[in-house]
Length: 339
Image 1 (tube, helix red, strand yellow):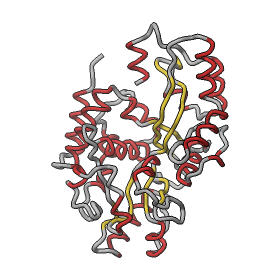
Image 2 (cartoon, one colour; image 1 turned 180 degrees about the vertical axis):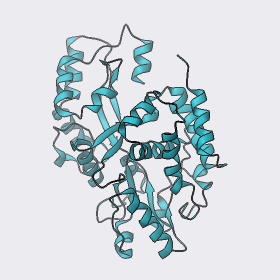
Image 3 (cartoon, one colour; image 1 turned 90 degrees about the horizontal axis):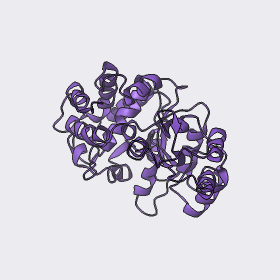
Image 4 (cartoon, one colour; image 1 turned 30 degrees about the vertical axis):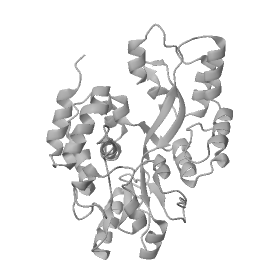
């Protein structure tokens, strides 16, 4: 989006003010400057954030069954197989990618998360920038990795149907079978906490909570993120001062106090004790941990015709009717706009 604005209004959009740049350099992971930049010019200052690499679950159900939080992808698959063996009438996973005209976007997050884990951050960056083809073998491998869960009838779709039901299940409703005891896990971002029915206890020992979607090794820490940025269209002093304030820990503190659950920042200088939601605190810890390899949602960085168009359609076709990873990725590659 920032690139679209910079391309469309090059004579109006302003570089981030010096004071705001100083705040970003001091308080944010360096990746956030990259995602606010176009052709090495810093236009978008980070504002709010969300962590996407989460698996939602029922702490009570895990405790009752003796299941432990996995720390690697292999452990996650082993746990999934154990759930199948232990619970013939309950599927380990539930999922939904229906979202009106945006149907398919939740599956793009699955692909991006698996790209970070199987291909690594450098190849992920090349893929997002289209420095490698969209259907590069590394991308096919990542989508097939997501398919180990999403396209396996033994694993999905708890309480909702088979694999094809994922395409018609609203992403907002997809986690409810966890509360009903019909599935154990669902992959979705930190903002999903707002989707649970009012009064749901979202905490480490509550009705539902989330754990970090692990990497291939226990010390791998890729984190898929989303967020908002501010862009200025005037270099007036008061505009620059306001943008600087929005990048400060003081503003993040005030925002956290006034908003309550469901809002976080990646600003490492904010007072984390002001975050009232346990999932917000977990997200903040991951976002600000120096060991975390932060990468922004790839589809949001791609040309809109792809990231909010052909990719959504392709991921839906991948689920239902069940097209192959190679074919749907080739379709997206063919749709990438020529320069």
